[in-house]
Length: 351
Image 1: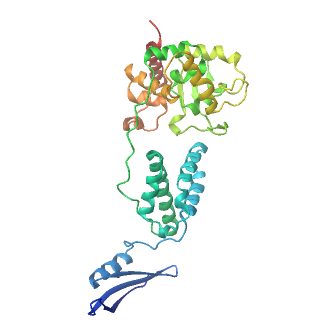
Image 2 (image 1 turned 45 degrees about the horizontal axis):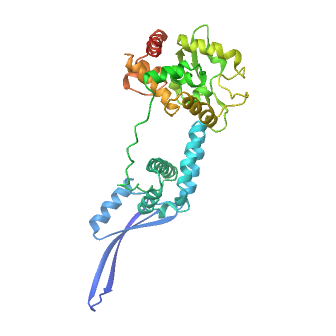
Image 3 (image 1 turned 135 degrees about the vertical axis):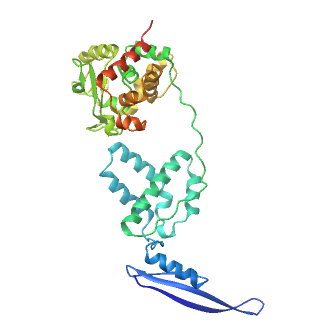
């Protein structure tokens, strides 16, 4: 790269009629045929910048690509490496960035980003979208050798989330005793809703007394996905005696020979239908608090820990990726998991 330093002296006439000479040192260089210049008040500053430029420490040229183009390119790349549910979430967050997408990257300012951020109603959503913007711009800068704008500082902080409601032990016992396997299952297996709705009968091994979690259901389309949220999500969950009995009784009456949790008419049971037609109405009829579906999974993990099960085993049953560093290097046998579920059964069982 050829970098030149030139001296420019200009004669400025002030308002009072006096003459002032302005000296500037200019560093000039070309990248991909595009001329770039930086101005400095002293030659020392110009030389220092030239030296950093020649050692690739100085900022690269700015990009004239729009923010929208950079985001679309990033989304297309992510589509090849992420699950459908995750990519749908990315697309939703990208829509929040639409006020910025028409701007060229080289004209994007921290002020415009801050104003956009302040205009998003939910701070959590704004922060997630901002993280996507940062990733997309960094990806574009890496591929094109251009400079990525720094993200603004001192943005509005996310308000502390209200404490989520969970059922107590007696309420969980009541939910299980209701006999509704759709509602009881996540309390006794600790599955994510996508894993529960994606469960097939070939994954329920009554002879071995285990449930194999190896699939998930797409939240929007209801299609089966032959992977779970993470690699750790593929796991074996021992059935408690109560769960085994409930599934065995449900299988002959199930409207599907493939999936365990079908819609009453036999069609695909989407997340929204499960929430509004099964989960909430069932809790309401029983006089239980309107907790979220994920609350059942949280209760499963909490009850395991309350029963004295170590964190690593509880995390293995829950399918967590990295709950602790120890979990990454220490494995537990299926026998350990059976003991854990037996402890959970003892807590849930009535005296």
